[in-house]
Image (cartoon, rainbow, N blue to C red; front, side):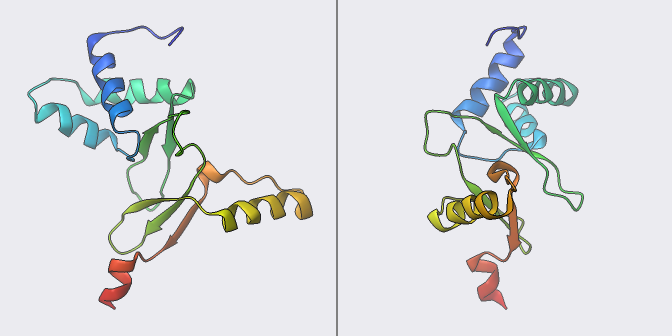
Length: 136
């Protein structure tokens, strides 16, 4: 990663993000991971480094609104999880990855017919997951 100062703490954070690229992690998740292993990395360090990684397009940041903590995901260009949509459960708060040809078609339609280029990375559909829907 050219242009990024490397420290042991930063290497640990990046390695953890890379190993968990299939997950959306909050800064608290990262902090808890290391504190549970008696590795001291301050929250301010985590937030500053996450912001730098977002700026360098190494990590994506998702804002889920309603006071929820932002979550982060390592950008794994080699995986199939490079272009996907998100479903956010109103009941349990779970964030679900979804790849869907029908939504791909919708995004193409928006651009072709309406001149609007939507960003699938920033698109979040809110509703109830199957587990929460079955509770009602």
